[in-house]
Image 1 (cartoon, rainbow, N blue to C red):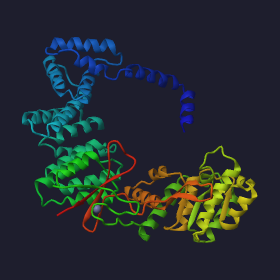
Image 2: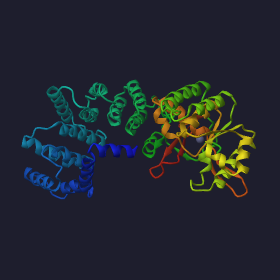
Image 3: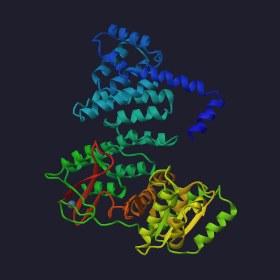
Image 4: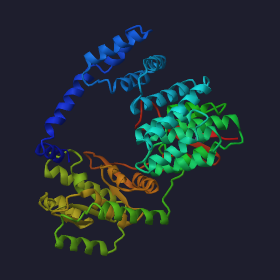
Length: 504
Ligand SMILES: [Zn+2]
């Protein structure tokens, strides 16, 4: 894909511009703190001081023009949390009688959000709220409909004021042209929780997930704070939401949850699912038959048919494949032949490849499993001793032309039923994005993580080491009255840690 974009750009003569733009970007990015350094290295108290600093910026950065300087200064102050400096700059603009453009106005709203958020609303200034609201009314009157970026900034700014409910309308306005960004959604959810509009907030959170917008922690923290304030509000609802959507907490959220509890237990969950805190075993969560059928039909619709997996297949090959599928043999294991064969590297000999695959086949047939191997016709040229063993003990389907192995593998595995095992080191996560609805994505991830076996290695004595899925799902869940929350730490985003809690 990279190559085709490159080729297209080159043909249309866009390449040169792209190159130039990148060059300009690199030049100014050499010292990303340059503008903020210019802003903070000078003592600025008067309008004249600002004029000097602005001139310096114009001289040093050729992409900064009078039309964008105000937004750039404010953005730098906001990003580096120099809020007082930003307010000082706004005072200067006010004195100079400069008319704000939309970019500057957006930053003013964003600044209000940041200052309020940092101070946790303690310095809430009613007159600032009134000024902001008046500014919104004025801009709205002048421009009519605002662009989505300005609207998103306006939402941020107004969400921390007592006029927060306007955010609902602005959010709807953005939805007419695009999907609002996570921050606009999250600010509105947060404000709704803070103001006790729980149903609206939960609905909006669900809508966010449906539209692939990840809720910011501020949503959950606002809800936790409400639960701390009023113990009759159910914290369990938050845990259910996290669990239903397989959302994993991060350290910031865990720290906020700890405010609610007098005691929190950080625990380990063993390979077998035993919690070292409450000594309960976290059970396996299998997809129901109904869920599996839904997933199967969605994968067929979006991944298999949508991607046209058989496009490169010859009619005779397709016929053979359909014949094999119609045999209706209940395979227990579907092996991605090439993936297993090349697990020790793609430059290994046919002898090594064949040895690996036949060892894996043997591993499963010794457990009385019915095995299907998908592979390529060139495997027939492998050392006879191994290939004959594979052929004698597994159903084998070799193709010449099917180029996209993953969807093809998924097709076979889904056909084999909900308990079938897929053997492949490929994570196949990319296919999840082809499924539109969040619910289907979650089913796919759960099914795949519980169905996939990965070959680790074949030992010299022929023993096969397979990485099997955990017997439980890493999601927030309640087991015999104890809530188990998986979370990532700042340092480790790969494997989860656990917290075990009991709600009174
Ligand atoms: Zn526990």
